[in-house]
Length: 518
Image (cartoon, rainbow, N blue to C red):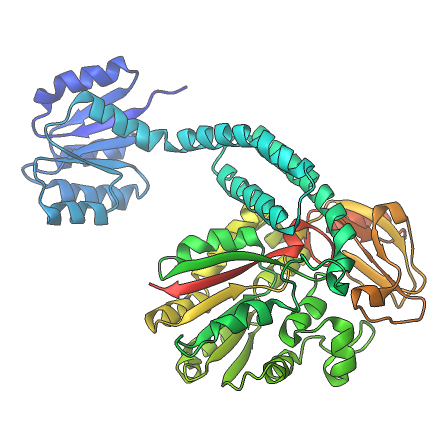
């Protein structure tokens, strides 16, 4: 391994000879400069890994030298060393993006610790994350093998998401593969749990059930609409997974504090047409089609399947006696997002405001259809990263800032998540079969019953029947449906894309986050 190259600039460098010898004995290469100008000249002819810079030098000052260093090499770590403890000098240095700040006199161990903190930080964090997950691996495995209830599954999923994000910091691909296998094992057991309990939850045979799509507004939003609380904004980011929420959380926490971080369960199929209509209506799909036939479109009906969400929300409020001013806005593109951000003052007189923001769902579809997005988000970590990049430059962040400034309460939630699919399951259907990759419904479906979760009687799951003999079948874990015709092309095209509609922790266990302004 190449030696670390250090440049140390100090007008009294001769007094620091013992420190420099100490560093050389530790295996570092140290070049010296006695002024800011000399340091800048050396930077033009040699590459350094880190600079120690005296703040108080004659001629070009330490801060001026720092500014010129950053202009040449923005990412080069600089440690500022000074005799002064004046707050303004410290603020100026920190504002100029120094990596560390030491007060004279410094001892060799201080210098060594600073070097390790800065240059070995990534490795130390990686090693620590790897070691900690190795310790946790066995405990998570034991939990998965227990007979868990829906709350305990939430706890397991939280832990797996935590370690996914922690191990993003690790360079150890082996440990990441171990986590991936553990997550797949967890999904396999979770699938069996859902298949054993889901129908009973819906039919009242198991009263110990989670909050579901059709009960979340009644059970989670309504209690927040009290007279002593400010207006509530519910921001539903379509297709937002819990891990995506966790990486957006530090950004949002600059403006809000998280009051409650909760997870509820999406209904099946985990797609917008079913899950989001259920949310806004407070009803299951068959109940919507019977009570509000004009607001429900079946699989084979033409038209947008979610065009009546605002109407369903109004009806839900009316049914539960919530005579309050409210609004519903759906954002489908950048222009609409900017317009809503500008129009927010007009919504502040409402007690309840729903905003549906449709970016993450478009991202998952774009990743399937566009090679450039596939390359930018080629794994789970990159998919999370591109979500952050979007959020930082979206009107949605401006909306959060405004709501925080006005001291409004905010809920962040979603309708369903998505899962990265990689294993094709063969199915045969007629031309009226729906196109979704994670669930199918139709009257002449041909499939291997061992590979799917089959709902033979859709009314058991409160799902509409397209035909008397129609059934629903759902993919599990990371499976996706593929037709035998043109099978290899189809499989290669859709493998490693993010899909939704079936059964997985990522699709079904979704965030409901309550935020209070700081």
